[in-house]
Image 1 (spheres, helix red, strand yellow):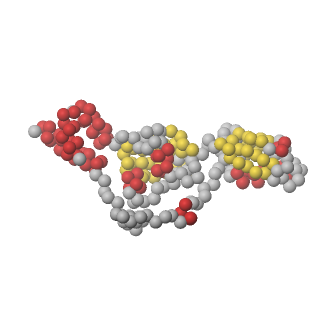
Image 2 (cartoon, rainbow, N blue to C red):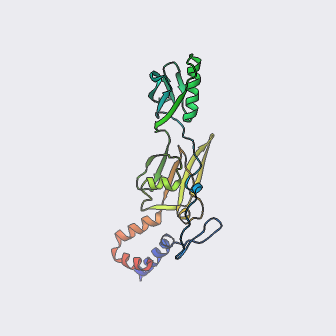
Image 3 (cartoon, rainbow, N blue to C red):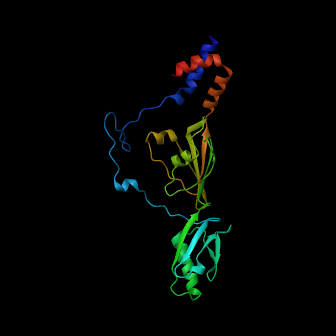
Length: 236
């Protein structure tokens, strides 16, 4: 009898973990069922709004000065966010786009009597534009922020959620101005199409919460193999 009550208790604790609501059509989501086919995306659906790539400390840029090969070179931004090149001198590159840095170098060269300088900047390697993901993912760490990085893409880069992840407790920490902000997200709801996959940006910190219920189930299975069979049968 005692085993029976333990099984019922564990089943109640884990009921929310094993049930999954079916997809439903809402104002934000259209569900195509049965033999219907999803319509193909339009051209505008295949491209998203561009996000400017910013230069930061320790990034590597390629500087090309048209018709002045001696000034063209690959430069690594120093730890303070600056670069140094002949004639142009020391220039603050931190927080600038490639186009903005090119314009700044052109102005510096023009001041040194270089006639009509034309500068092109390419970001060859970016180590400053990264997002941190921690908590219950398979591979926590730092991941580069691509042009259209989102929460689900970061989780996928980290090889997905771990066994003990709490899907409704995912936090994005972000600094806006001088204010520290946090957004709470439900990965399961995003997968169900309840709301959009939120974008993430450089310097965001993502923390995936821990599920005590999943750990309890793991411990229960390991300590009580005889009870685990009836429990699994009930959950199925």
